[in-house]
Image (cartoon, rainbow, N blue to C red; front, side, top):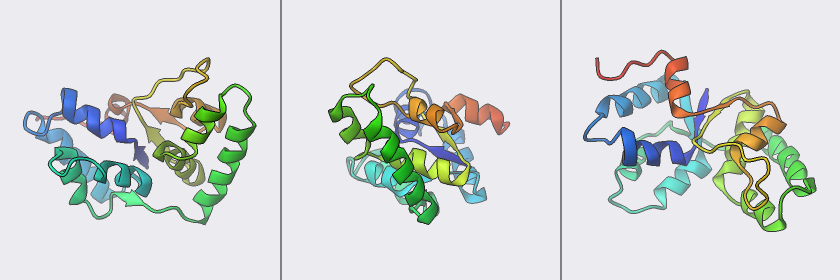
Length: 162
């Protein structure tokens, strides 16, 4: 399964897959969600739902019942493992560690680790950055596959607009 980060949906709508211009992208996602190929975690869903009531991404997510997976025992175990790594990592400032353990990114990577899934995000690895823990850097530490939106679409053979 591909687990989608918030930035994938927000950036898609705001930049290259706007709902009114490329509805095929959103239809493809809906089909992939229904098939169990694409999803996310409840913390990402909550992050999106906390936005503006008129935001098209929020409205779209609101109608998707099976989009977000709640943490299970395996995810909680993976969260503990990632938390130990995060807290013990001397590269990052304490504020960066605290922030990471508070936001959806932490849950997303833990769920992927627990279930052998792939994280889909637009974040880039920045191993020298001390002020923010990037999803790809945590994924690399735990051998969790990570890719961008186009990588997911290509891997799944998606063709939009035909």
